[in-house]
Length: 109
Image (cartoon, rainbow, N blue to C red):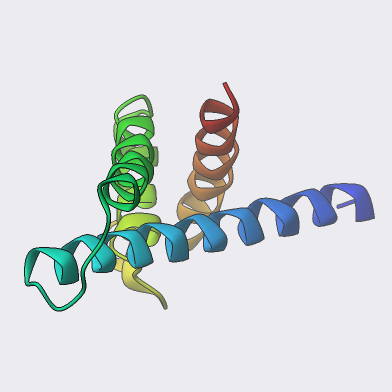
């Protein structure tokens, strides 16, 4: 595998990690606001809700296997080898690579 491809995959992975953190922090903000543990302005709620809705909407545009991976890694924040119950390692990595690329491409549209 060329260095350019490796860097591209690494950049995709970093983008997905940032999206996952953004999603998790946004849902936490909304949850805390609903529990009155934290007061948010209307604009903060609206922009936070937009992030959540947008990231979830993109998942609906992926095929089933890709959506499954993105839901587990970005939305649910699963780490480790959670996928072994569902995929062989080679199938998982191949599908994950495509899922990341498609997810990021759709987000940019």
